[in-house]
Image (cartoon, rainbow, N blue to C red):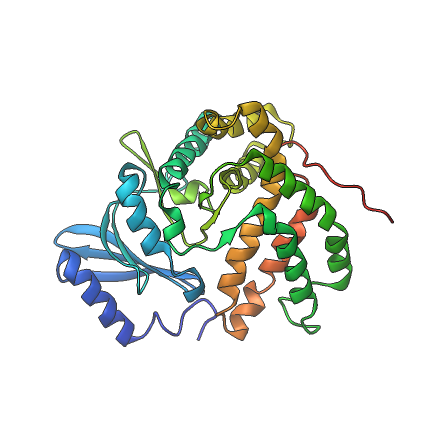
Length: 333
């Protein structure tokens, strides 16, 4: 069996279960076509009664998307795909077709479009604040960041040589030396004291659809519960690459400000700007966490392909922040 396919999602038993779930919502499907099958999730295009919809299920470590989207449909329905059916216990989700994603439309994502994307995402976060803690998400609190990094370094460095998940000793030593900086970043973000909320953790044009002037978001499998500024890491990283920008590029600052403005009635925008570089560094831990959850249930063959991802994301803590420069503590050598 290919490393790209799942031993579960390809079985007749699961297909019968999926068709029963779909049929209860939209009628007996005429066609169920598997579009994507990766160790972390599978997606099917469904045709029933002349209409198209999409079904999805995530791996056990990320089996919270149905609950998230069901919750978002209650507090911010205009920002997500229409929910046709959701089974949080099995993490089965069926949503209406919204057409091509921003990336699939093939048009460049300019600064104005990025500003709108991150601002709408921040509005969605604010809508989710009151209920997101009931969706069963992993909590990544700034206060726990130093311990999280230390534990991750110790766990990954202790793996045997040849294990694709292993963190090499030299890199482990560099990350250990970085712990005072991680603690400083956490202190900066804690001082801002924004409420914890949904952090999408994979927010880019392939997970966004623009329909009738409305921005809709999907693919919440990587989500965590955390401070909201970290939601900007992936879009700013992606925009930096697309725009060929450096961290001090005013275009990136403008994009970041579009999201910060949404929170500026809670915390002055000058304080948000000052905390953003530190928040973006801590947000790298959410990427570590989502990959850790996915790798946990991979086969040996799949780990050979993707098993290095948690360690790779952990080492990005040594990179500069996508916008501005996060403060670093002095490390005695």
